[in-house]
Structure formats: structure tokens, C-alpha cells
Image (cartoon, rainbow over all chains, first blue to last red):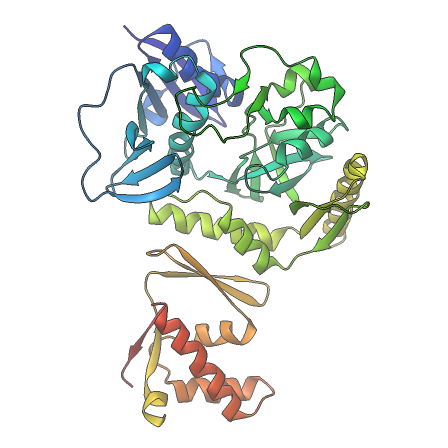
Length: 341
Length: 94
């Protein structure tokens, strides 16, 4: 028996099926946040299918498969046709790139951690599957104001979620706090929403009083107890809409690219960054791909992005509350410059 | 050195180049390594088509940049050696 759901993400049908209610919850946890659920069947032939099983794969990863992404405890391999996701060396998922079909085998210990399953197993394979539709995910926070988006590329723990909250509470609109999707369109490179729950550290919550009431049991994003990766900073998953209302915007033209660092200075500094340097930094922060064709596509797209928007380093000082004002001014300047060209 | 000047550098077929401002950024699709070339390096990359010899490339650069030919040759040979060591160019006979 399979429990099924239909979603659409930027026009792409996504079909999920799961063998038990708990697996169904895990299959839908991520998709309910980032996609729109449909009441009736969509055209699954043109879309992505995701199946969650409680069993185990009856085959090992092919010998000689090439690792295309290693981010301990995750490892993704490819045999140049399909991708294989390993967590702590155990095969837990596959992506058939040609059929755009994801299969995940969820061990009993992970069944009741839907956020973990969504983030660590479904998400990497889904982002790779989305490349077939021209989407490239960027490890960045992305927020929009007056029709222009500021992108903040940074590693995990680089302050993306804290920046996101600081701007959301000032009225900015959310595209994503961790991996907006970029795609070439007739208007140039456009940032698209991928509005997962915000994963924010309890320490950061202390700066934003409105978030304290949103914390509740069951939202902890942490590895299961038997995982050896206990050093991962425990974060809390927050639904941005429940705190800031209908704050998600589906797509927006990028207006500025800012690489954030946390400085100990009293004042925030924003310094221009050369486009080639920005491109090299972006490339280091972008998920690789199993496919050389998609790597090339990603390289072209990011090159076009840094050529189209001004790039900066953002040294956030202790005047954190003024950040929305600074970013707003940057986006307005960019929009004025563009109008005058 | 003259023997080297007769050889023709050719861009690797596995390398993708993207021009950004005055610089070129290279992606080696096999190793997934990235490289950034400055303005002169970008020009050398553009001229490394497998038909132009090092001597021809140096002559071209000497006509475009305000520097002494000996210095240009030294810089071009240094860069081409590095590009070859990284597998980004191959050498064709003239």
C-alpha cells in the first residue's frame, strides 16, 4: 500500500509515495514547505517522483562509482547514469537521472525524524533532479525588497538564518534562507523560492523575541541519538509564515550579491568585490553535480549572475539592527543605476 | 628556449572558460577545479588555439601591452607552463 501526494514546485510536478504514514510524513515534510500541494494527480511523467521505503536496498552502490559530493556524513556517488546517496557509508537513496525518480530507504532509527530525512536524504537528490529543469541551487539566503533580491552566499553556520530573520522582521520577503534556486530566463538569471523551514540556533532566537513563542516540541533539528555526529549544532526548525505571515515571494531578479562575515566591529561595513573573485567564492559554495553537463550549466549561470549584479563583502558589525536599512539602500541604488542605464 | 617558442598551446577540450569583467575564470570539468586568469592571462588563454606558436602569442601581446618583449615572453612562458602542469592546455607542434 502506498500513500501518495502531488506537489508542484515552480511548475514542476513532484509525486511522492510512501509505504507507511510515518514515511509519508517524512516524504512530505520538506515538500510541504517548499512546494504547493495539489488535490489531484499531476502529470507525473513530466515531473519528479519520490518514493520512501521502509526496507533496505538489495544492491550495493556499483563498484568504481565516482564520488561527486562528500559532505560528512553524506556521500553521493555516480556511475555516470544514476546517483547513490550514502549516509555514514550506508546506501539510503538513489536518483535515476533519466527517469527523475528518487528512491529512499529509511532505516527505523530515522523514520520519526522527518526533518532530518528531508534535509539529509531527500533534499540532495531533489536538488540534483531539479537540474534537469535548469535550476541551480545556491548555498545562500535570499530576500527581496521592492522587486530586487539580495543574495547572501555563505557556508552552514555563516549567519544566513540570522540575516534572514533580521530582514524578514523589517518587511523583506523570503525566497530562501539556505538554498534559493537560480535559473536562466529571458530576463536574465532569476532567483526562485525554496522556502524551507528556517533552521536557527537557539542562541540566535534570543536576539528575536517574536521567535521564542514559535518554538515547540518536535521541531528540533538534530541527528538521531545513535548517530556519531553529535557535534552538529542543534538548531530549531521554524516556519517563517507562522511568525511573519505570508512573507514568501516565488521569484525575483537578483539585485545584489553579498558575502557575509561576522565582524566584531561596531559598524557594519559593505565593500565592493570584483566579479571574478565573487564567482570563485560562489563556485566554492555551490553544490557540485553528478553530471558534467550540469556543472557547465551551473558555471555559465553563476558567471552571468556575477556579471549582472554588483557584488560585495558584508562585514556585519554590532549594529545588526541597521542591517535592513543598509541592504535596502544597496538594492535601491542598484535599481536606480539600472533605470539610468 | 626557441624550440619552446615554436610550440603551439591549445586549450584543453575539458576546460570551460567564462569571461567576467576583464578576467577569465576556467573550470576543468574533469577535476572540477577552478582557476582565475588576470587580463594578460585571459588574453594568452584566448590566443591558445593550437595554431599560434608561443612566439606569435608573445608578438601579439607585445603589440597590445606596454611592456618589454623579453618580460612578456618570460611571463607568457611561466603562465603556459603552469597551465600545462594543471592539464589545462596541451602542446601542439608548430
